[in-house]
Amino acid sequence: MYKKVFVGVVLLGVLTTTIAACGIYDQSNVPTGPTVHMAGSNFLQPSITISKGQSVNLIDDVAVLHIIKNGTWNGNNQVLKAESGAPTVNVTLNGNDSSMVGPFNTSGSFKLLCTVHPNMNLTVIVSQ
Ligand SMILES: [Cu+2]
Image (cartoon, rainbow, N blue to C red; front, side):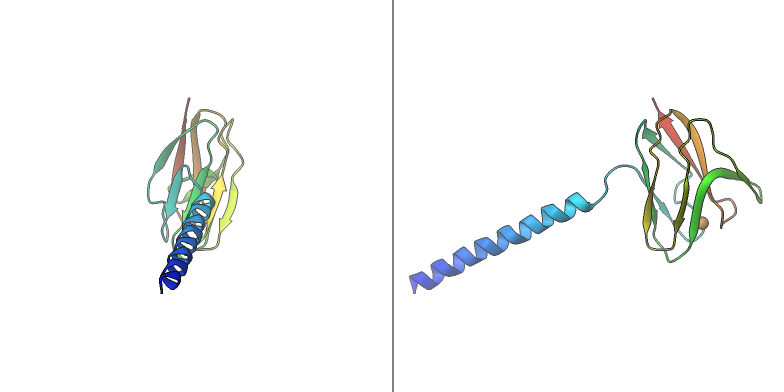
């Protein structure tokens, strides 16, 4: 009787340790650092401030295509242009996915746009 209880307790301990280990492993896979989310036709924030050397994880929360490049929308005209010191950005998000852009190694203000959606602009501000 006591032997069965003991085995049960040991098994429970092993199971708990295994589940805890999986939890730790999963956490290491989640990218940390600055993130910007996207909805159907816009970034959820107009700008993000990061530190020099960081990248930005763009997260497409919906099943919508976004193509992100250096530049900005000026009214209904897209102006493709990379500022001096800007990393080259050209990423396609097919929906419900994410992509890192950067690293931004120069301080300053860098504009990104989505070529699919007019006025979908993001400014990355890189502090010193
Ligand atoms: Cu878009």
